[in-house]
Structures are given as C-alpha cells and as structure tokens.
Amino acid sequence: MFSKTADTTSPPPSRPATPGGNAGRSVLGSDLRITGEITTSGSVEILGEIDGNITANGLIVGHEGRVTGSVSAQTVEVRGKLDGKVSCDSFTLRSSAEVKADITTSGIVIESGAQIEGRFLKAKG
Image 1 (cartoon, rainbow, N blue to C red):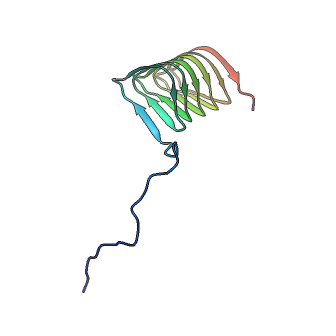
Image 2: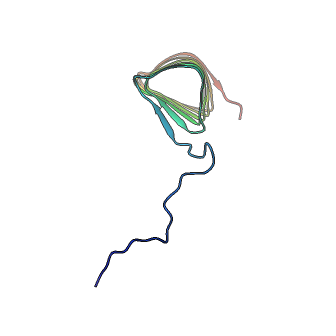
Image 3: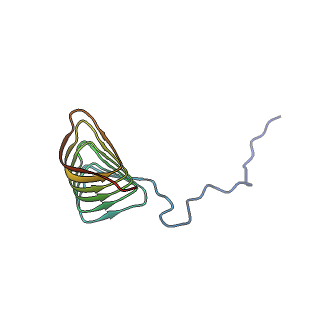
C-alpha cells in the first residue's frame, strides 16, 4: 500500500559559492591567545585573549574574554574586559564588563555594575 523510495529529484543542499558568503558566527575559545588582526564579515565571540585589532559585523567579548586593541563593528557587546578604542553603531556593556576605552557609537546600553573608564563620543550619522 505504502512504499518508501529514494527521492532523486532534489539536489543536496549546498554551501554558498561566494567567498565570505557564509558570514556566520565564529567563536574563539577560552584556550586561545591571539596576537594580530582579526577581520570577518560575520560576527565573532571572544572567550580567550586577543591582542590586536578586530573588524567584524558583530563582536561579543565573553565573561572570560579579554580584548586589547581597536575594534570596528556594527554591534559590540562586552561581558569581559576590553581595553582600547571602539567604533560601532550599537555598544552594550553587561554588568560584568570592565572597559577602558574611547567609544564612538550611536547607541549605548550600560547595565548596572559595569565598569567603564574612557570617553563616549556620538557617531556622526
């Protein structure tokens, strides 16, 4: 009455053919320590230590994460430590954040308990 047959008409799903077209989220683990520049068209979550500049669509510095350098991103969320210079559209400091930076942004969210030392400048839009 019912039978199970293999469907050979639909091709298997494929990955994007364009380089950088898979702009997902990269997670840099807590055991990583990187000195250098990180550039991505996607988002990056830092759980380890980065000493260098970061250019990304989105950046999350995790609770144990530590970033020292310049950051350029659309959105930045800090739960760990950030020391340097930030240029972004949206900047969020979680309660566990420790930031020493000059920040140029259009929007700011600061949770109670976050520590900040530096300047905020309004981005020209």
